[in-house]
Every structure is written in C-alpha cells, then in structure tokens.
Image (cartoon, rainbow, N blue to C red; front, side, top):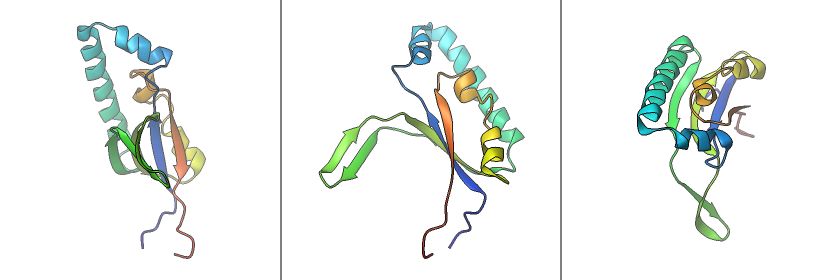
Length: 122
C-alpha cells in the first residue's frame, strides 16, 4: 500500500469556449507556435524548479469516456491535464502553481489542487 500523505493531485482546467481560448484560436499559426514554444519552455522550467515536489509529471488528457449505470458515453469536461506533487500542506501545494504557464501563457482557466486521501480501511 502506498503512502499518500502530503500527496496532491493538480488538475489543469480549460474551456474551449472561454475568452482566453477564443483569443488563442484567433492567433495566427506563427504566433500560436511561438506561444506554444514559449509556454513549453516555461512549463519545463516550472518542473525543473519544483522537481523535488513532482511525484508524477502526469500529462495532457485526451477525450473522455464516462462509465455509469447507463453504460459508456463520450463526454466533454474541462480537464486538460494533471500532475501529482508532494508538499507540506494543501496551501503549500497550491502555492507551487501560482503564475503557472498553464494560464499565464496558455489559455488554461486554472488549476485545481486536492489532497490524495488514504483509502478507508486500507
């Protein structure tokens, strides 16, 4: 059984209908590629700066299927990616993502950070 203490899941969110995405989509191909290069360089710099806190780099998320009592369905949500980190507290975990390139360079809406809790009875 793994120890989830001080482990946090960061979910990167973005909506294709947001003003930031609309502005991103309005960029010329050349401008968008330039921003993508800048954004990825900044993202890698963020990872390097916080490498001691990063447990799992995670990555971008693709199309979603939802499984429920009514079967399997294709759905749309705002989840764009994830990272798993360790920090001394929930507040410290959140502070790691202040001014993150997901929303300062890319058109992301924000990042939600939540603790990974122990499995009950585990």
